[in-house]
Length: 485
Image (tube, rainbow, N blue to C red; front, side, top):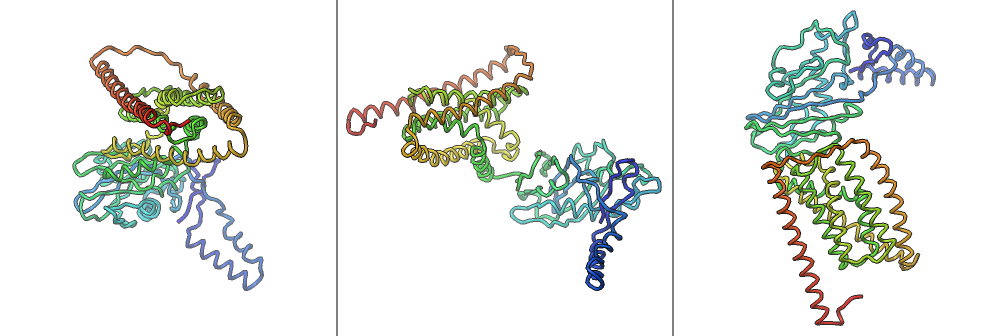
């Protein structure tokens, strides 16, 4: 196994030098150590330099690598078709012809071992809870030229891999061809539930994009695209499997979202009692759930200027809440209305984080969205459980409540102001031309759906807050001692 050196002087001579095979390297290291012990301490260094001087370095890990793969169960076997750039397979001895091009005839027999080591060895595939062997049968390997379009569909890719090989006389240098492989895994049934963990493929390059398409036995295709290790990916998850994944994603997202946490922090500072925070946090939750679900069902603008606009408005919401805390005088009733309005904006921000992860929902999109919201609420609850006692301690032992509120809110406002300016500068780069929508049946139907949603939410808000306040007032009238200050 060896790695190619890339000669910067002439790309066509890039294969002139190759790293020594692993076995040869180990033997040379053993020999140098034996000589060093038998003769003199510096002998090992002299021998190593003498043996390795002609082939000193190897070509770097490629920067950008795209992995294309198909994954189809059929009968008692599972076909796994993979295409990667040959340059990403770094431990393969690539022979050359006299004029510096690939010797395809000599290279082809070495490809199955390289594919097993670098591809199937980096992927874990499961049938149910049972892991399939990581050394499956290599049914076919092919070299392809750049621009080959065989991997546009499973049928084309399979026909390509089982068809004629690339002619040996094709003139290619080491970093040009693609390596295509067909692996066959033994399975019990093509009706089983399959999953895959492709994280190992991200060792193939610095920036790796993996495009994976699972082809069901009935021909339905489910596509996935990863820019980083996704962990275990279930091709057809059960609803509870998708729900658990999205609860976890929502929980982590709220903890990683600095802007959302600062907004929550501003909401909490004046009202540090859970009873007072219930309507505020509930309003924020209902609002961001509306826009999150609407975005998932493609009811939000998909223009390029929309994300920077939302990010700018999120920063505006933090600045506003911080300034309101500084001015003072906010009531719970006013605060939940503001939380509801800005929650609509934050819901769009949550949706941007979900764009790449909704592919893991399978056929359970609504359950996954609701589970994501559950995860967000759990994260918010954890933050509140830490934040409220910390603020109480701060105001009780360090600084007076009013002064502490002003200082903390001013710091948050300063940070959010810079975010707002930077994000608005990005938003201004888009030359937006707003056009009135065409008044057709589709537009009217979409407007009606939104109106129904707004009316329903208004009714729920009236029922919740109206009944809640009314019962609270009745209870306070009936039992004056239960009133709170």
